[in-house]
Image 1 (tube, rainbow, N blue to C red):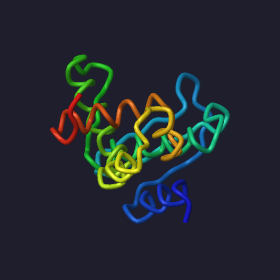
Image 2: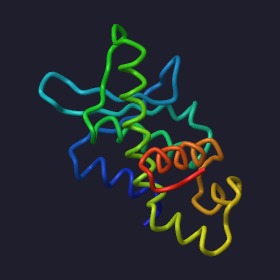
Image 3: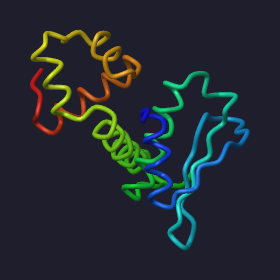
Length: 140
């Protein structure tokens, strides 16, 4: 099963509706309704690639799986915390620490090589390294 299929399966198994919608300002978004049901919208015209689709849905699943939502009136600090939680969930799902350690032990240490190995962007790999540093699993 591909990583993208795994993301959609995760959504399905957790009763999270994923739909393609033309969004005007972003490639994806997630929300939780008053009943606690989660929904993810992806704009196929803004995704650009399967890699980006994986990263977008993983991030939005992170919001849903951790309940990390905010609104336009939330403080910047609150927004930052919720975004970090969503990113952290996506990192753990797409780049498990044991697999990252295995890559290191095989000599794959450059950010671009790691990104290539895990089929993510360099920016997302940097996020992953940041998450694992904050968790105390990696040192600078």
